[in-house]
Image (cartoon, rainbow, N blue to C red; front, side, top):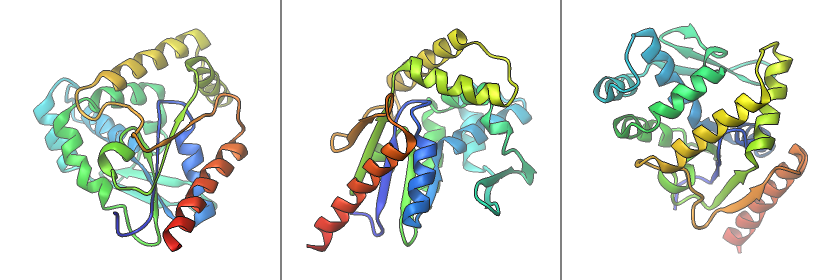
Length: 229
């Protein structure tokens, strides 16, 4: 078992992992790990250094020496810095997300980032969201959740988010891109996207954020109660 409590939240793109992880971490007073941000940072770093996403060796070296810092902001949120530059918004673009999905298939990159992710586990506890948190990074976590939703619902959510930011996209295009990312994540040889055997799957398609948060907190409470009996 891990030294401190860990809640892992895995799932495909757009399933609500990040949002739910942030709300739950605030409720519990635990730290949070957005593992996807690390892969997005490798993608941004590769672009800055003109390294191709098919250059496995260079990408692995890049991940090993990644100069990334996450700084909490007043009022919530996190500022993400790469080599001293603020890339908070740059890592959240659709283009970066697609590049990160390609980077994540690199075995060397995954190996380089593994211990970095585990180092986030400190007192009083950690909420870790990603695609292999419960299967690879924290396999001994006491509470594991796998969030899912239909590709159409996930695309609608992203469509609304981008529209609010004034980004011109089509719903059909987003659905296609999400389906491509799902296929790539599920079929990659290293740490494929799959629910841990002991994870609780929650379909968020018809649920509000509050409903999902309540379910997840209930699971954490159940585990905590069992451990104190």
